[in-house]
Image 1 (cartoon, rainbow, N blue to C red):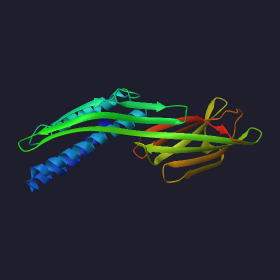
Image 2 (cartoon, helix red, strand yellow; image 1 turned 180 degrees about the vertical axis):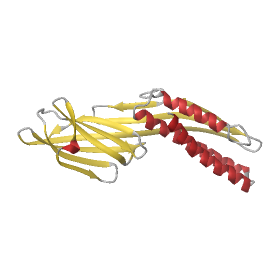
Image 3 (cartoon, rainbow, N blue to C red; image 1 turned 90 degrees about the vertical axis):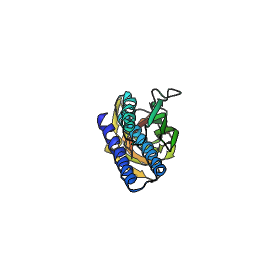
Image 4 (spheres, rainbow, N blue to C red; image 1 turned 135 degrees about the horizontal axis):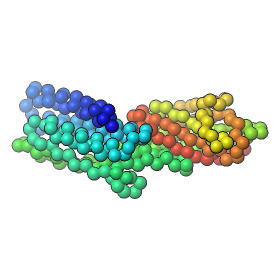
Length: 241
């Protein structure tokens, strides 16, 4: 948790340092207030994204609130012409608990997401800023699978995966496919005739041959997006023999 917050605050403080240097070079304070607000919004996203990286890889969901508290306190001490105030609310509705949604089901769909509402306010002698903002950082994965039985217990399995960031097609940093055989989960890339095709648009097709006794074949796709957010989804393959 500390490492995630430190990285995010370093990014934000770098942006705010540039902002403060620019003030000494230019007296138009209104313009620099805008720069400050943009830096705060970007820093907010960095903290939220970094928190989700931690949570999705096994960290406690309380990390999100703790990191945002630390970030809000940090920002509140920076601005030299007034007092920035940040209030945030972690969404508790539908599938979100304390702003976090981790749902890795067996229906071919998995999601790792964070939803936060916040309000940034800043008032000084010349500028009054009220900035309500909602941030949704979500990585989702859709998995489909089919198989054929050419002979005996040999199964030819094809898995197609689709990755999304905030509902838009996104690239995976890496993706690993597992399949279930005799109650054990085995890696697909250790099997014969393994093929991995990256279509470059968030779509991935994985094919492999395996010895599986069961007629019902379960597969699991486990992936990281380019932001380092982890997501997984399981499905049962359809027999198309």
